[in-house]
Image (cartoon, rainbow, N blue to C red):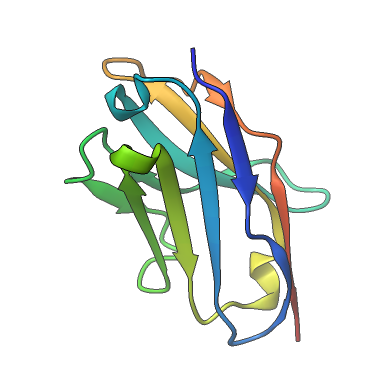
Length: 119
């Protein structure tokens, strides 16, 4: 089992950058594939970015491709989401999630961090 805690959210203006962090507990953090999701008010939660356990493979939603970068440091049990050129439509609560290798569903979730982008 892994516990996840997000940080780094805040209020920024359009065009600004933010870096979110997700700290995981446990010695097995490096065996989990990780993802970032977001949920805007009145909308369903959506996938943003994912990274495999070793960090060699990343994938993104079309809406953030070229602007967001996911990365991880397994020595620090942390996954990051660098968000550049932020837009008002990026406003949401951002969640990190973990799934064990071989699982299709994300099993563990953080509590979320709010990102608000003003026009």
